[in-house]
Length: 190
Image (cartoon, rainbow, N blue to C red):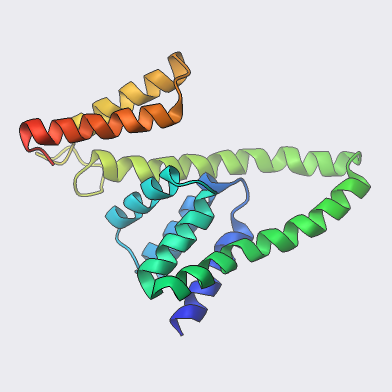
């Protein structure tokens, strides 16, 4: 039963996550946290971090990670197949029709219309990751001890380095990780 749930959950994610990995994050969250309760919001933030650090698409890495957490290696395989199957089918069909009708004005109009929705999905995914990182209880509240200043400063420094200096994202991630380790070693802060 768990294998079928994993397969169907990630089949839905794979079928409706247009716009890439970040656009898939709200869909993954809805399945693994809200519907099936396989993870907590904190675990989900860790999932996103691990999925970002490993090679490959975020949705595939996330499916593999969740599947493994829930049902071991067979679960990882089932969830991964579930998330990639719709893409394989859609891309094959779309490639055929796109090559046949790519100059059609209506097709170009449809693609133009989808872009704002994809941007909105990416924004939601970013906020889903950012809020638990900055607020201890996972909710936006400036109650005593809830707002975490050091992760906020790291976020601003990373954003500045990426936008202003066009820094290498991998280097920025490594430096942020090192800064966090140093902060924990020096202050015992967690």
